Image (cartoon, rainbow over all chains, first blue to last red; front, side):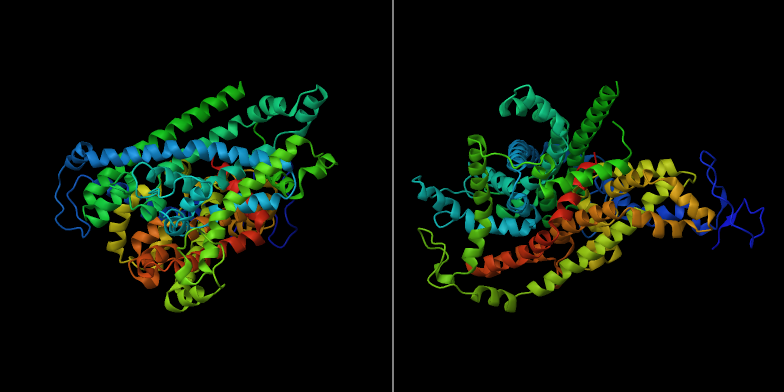
Length: 322
Length: 304
């Protein structure tokens, strides 16, 4: 070993120094260079710098140039790309689609997640069944979920959704993914089915953390189950709800996979999210400079949400500390 | 309010264990069947049916003869039950290759993420060097950068590095995850220093302490990080979709989406490949339900 112990007043062969008494300062040792703290963080920092920091910086550089995907014809154009993006109604439409998807999906994803967790928690038995059926879809790749709903659930007439409508006597023949009125809702429905299991698990863990004595006390006071839900369970879940909502908003804003697979952004670009706009501009249209500029506008949106959340949670913590 | 992470982890573990063994054991009695509970059970079972139906329908479709897949009104079982579709997609397509790619990429990404993030977290939590706080701040700031924002410049970088259509091109951008460093730092900070110091006094170096004391003590949190990383890498779509153009190098979800048009209107085959692609993680989940539930709940919340 290369450690040189500075307590080495004793000869090296002598008895080992006793461990420091409690409260004594940490052992001071002189170390070989390979023991230096920076050696531990260096491999991570290298990968981090290459694949996160550098693209973040170089993307900023690209966004002020007229760069195509091959890296040729790059001229400095200043803020032209940004100006073009802000003046482009397609960019605004895709940003709006992203926000609209986020609003439509967050509400049911949080509420359904809560309801499922309450059911599983209060029923107490066959936990494996609830977890398997409600959480398992979360483990399916987006490609699998997208293709499943695209090919056999949402086609008109023979699709499962239409047939289910017919079975209960409603009019089938709905263009679930091809009608502008329904396409976004169908995508939201798919997303709820697919990812609600994550929120379900977070709520379930939170429910199990509520101390049982609160309920016992309430029961002695004669509180019914509805009152216990309203005055104990829901208030105790407030913090978790905050976390779940923020995580869900951030996840929903990044929507791409299922929309790209199921509708390709259609019909008539009515479901195209901003990430797909970036993809279309940069990877299909080869205008990678312009695509970077749109990415940064999208980043600003995400950052606003993250910073707002940071500010809120800090304020909460201060209030709790008081 | 501020219990050490060390203790918190124990609580979380006990909490999740509670799920598994059922709360009934804790209160010592089986709950009675009040009308309210019967209603809840009926609602829950109905929701289970709703959640299972799409998967059941995919399986049912995949087992029908191709000519009967679009029949109306719908039938769950065709004139015969046949595995032809499975045989055809397995023999004709690249499913085996894609599954290997997905497994290789996910395992490598998980290993690298766990090792790199744990080393970095130990460096930030337990060593002191000039610039440590600044560097850690830089890493924490990265939590707010979603990888999706970087696709355009990252792709250009991959072209420059010649990593397009390689495993490393898929793996490397997914490895440095600042949120995982944050989770591990919080955990390492809660590991009692006395354990390490006793080893230092015995002449062990930092690397030895890291590998033989800190890492084994952190097994639950490392498992949580590994499970979370594996699931998200296995299911990642956008980045592998962008950086692979050669069908031989595609991951499972990307490959499927890429060839969907070549199945034409062969619904049975489409669903057979969907079932094959969805199965591996579901099997893993059935086997490690407890660990996965714990890992996801823990990692999902610990970022906050």
